[in-house]
Structure formats: C-alpha cells, structure tokens
Length: 324
Image 1: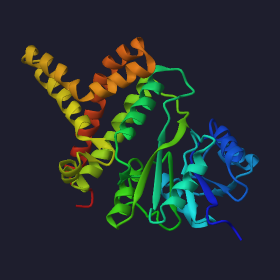
Image 2: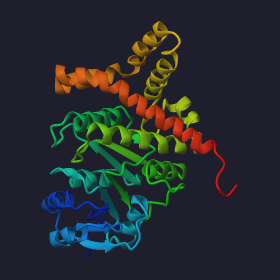
Image 3: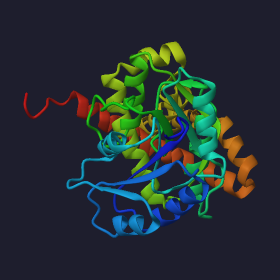
Image 4: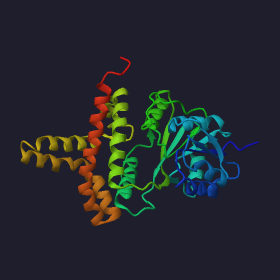
C-alpha cells in the first residue's frame, strides 16, 4: 500500500534531448522510494524518449503534438499517486523540492495545488538568461501566498484537480487552468521557498520573441477573462501587476510621441521607469553595477516587445473568427 504522501512526478516534454537527462538525474537523486517519475513525450522528433527511458522514467509517448496542457492531463490520467508534481524538462529541482511539496499538502488538507518559482541562480552566465530568471523570481515574490494561477515549470496538484484549460492556447495555459481551478473554489498556495533552477539559455532575440509571445497570449486570456476586474480589485491579473502594465503603456506612449514632440517623449521614457524602479534596484543588488546598467537599457526594449505582444493580442481578439 502506497503512502498518501508519495508523489507522481510528471515531466511533460517536447524535443528536450539537450536538457531532460540532467532534469531526470536530479529527480531520481532526490525522490523518495515510493515516488514515481513519468515522462510524457509530446511527439518529440529527437531522442527525448530514449534518454528518459535510459534514465529509468516511465514513458508515455503521444502520437500527436498537442501542447503542454494536454501532456499534463495525460500524465495525470496514468499517475499512480494522489499528489502529482509537474516539472518542466528544462528545470532542476533542489534537494528539498519534493519534501516541501509533501509538507504543503500535509499541513493544509484543503489546498488543491502548490506553486513554486525560479531561484535567483542560473547555470548560464549570459545577461539575457539571468535577466529573465531574476525577472520571474522578482515578480513571483511580489505575489500573495494565495494565488489564482499555476506555473508550468513547477507546481504540484491533487490528482483529479487538473482540468482542461478553457482556451486551447499553448502559452498561458497554466494561468488559464489556475483561474478555472479557483473559479470552482479551489485553493492554490504559492510557496516562495519552493525554488527550482531554470536551465533555459536565452539570447537577445529568443528572449524578446518569448516575451512578445507570452504577452500576446496573456492579453488574449486577459480579454476573455475580463482581467480588468481583477486588476481593479487585486492590483494584478494572474501574476502580472498593474505597475508592469503601466510601465509598458508609458513606454509605448513615448514611442508614439517621439516623432512629434521629443520633450514629452523623453519625459514619458523617464516616467516609464518609475513602475520598475524596484525591479531594477533588485537587479543592481543581485548582479552588480554593470549588469544593472545593462538592465536599464534592456528593460525599455523588452517593454517594447511586450507592448507589441499586447497590441497583437488585442487585434487577434477583435478580429472576427474564420468561422464567423
């Protein structure tokens, strides 16, 4: 008979041959004897399944690539235990990760899910990887302990509580699923000590494209969910704070006024930094003067990318569907 605190660890993955081996090595190193490791291969074209099999994981090979939300549901379906931890294949758990999950569910019998976050450390020394990692760490640390979103990289949930998201977007599906869970009365806890290391290596192009894409899909979810009500009541929608959107809005206003009246544009640029002073101070503290100065320049460029994603998301929602 299995222990009720045993965990089914599910790793949804697609073309992750370059990182899944290290991810699984950590999982097998730190899991308990009763835990199981399941890899849901979302129709990868590389050697992901072979690497996972050699590592000792149970493999579920999907015939068609349908995205991470579907892969997680497939993992939930075949999981043996009542607690399921979902870990992305480019994430490294820490020694206490699984024990913190066990402790959370043991301490609060009424919670449906517990969510973790990225640590401040990153294995790659590059600026863009560290900028993104520290950005995510800072944003999550500003969220309350009781939240209404999931975080695909690291969260655990009671079996049966994970539902199909209302919208079939491949980005933002974890936020959508979390909102659906809390709409039904579920409780999600953010454990700010539940830290994992993110291995993804970003360059300038990949980070800007990532932030554009995330913003695009986030905006679609925001409009469908009438997120302005949440922002008025809670000061945030999902993990996005009102101040983040204010900074992006001011950045784009500075661009719009630049061809016509540069003094106003310059003033708006200066104002756009006010909502992110806390974040920039965080970067100076964590990585020093040179990194902080780079961040001051890049934050403005990144806001342009995210603003473009927001505009694209609004346009997508306003355009009539093909079937209309």
